[in-house]
Image (cartoon, rainbow, N blue to C red; front, side):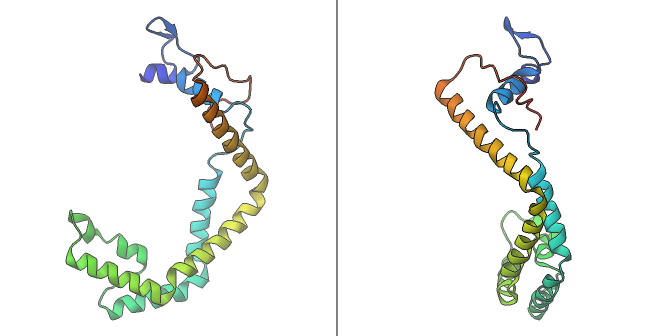
Length: 174
């Protein structure tokens, strides 16, 4: 299967295997007419936004308020992420009574500190700032996705036996 999928054999059961395999041929068919665009850009921008958000000073008072609330309840965690990733929670099939208590306290403290609304607001601002310089590339990516979606719909409705992708429009690599 992998040999046919990735073109590591010239033929299978008497039929020619497409150059670079069936996967590349399908990608060419589904990507025909779509502009080239960096499909990894949104993920890279998301990572940058998370990193920028984590360093944003507007989160510090909120995190201090959350931590203080948790400490008053007898739980010592640096952040909501640290609380949710406590190694103690990984050893049980079902949540323990302690884990449920910590989770309930975490939610209450996040609500009191306005953690989620602040995090969402700050993250969205960083996302918008990062997206600005990449508007043209993001627009191309959106166009690419819309064209690929139409091509998928067409392929599913016509079930072509041997599609031929338009020359030079898509190489299936990104």
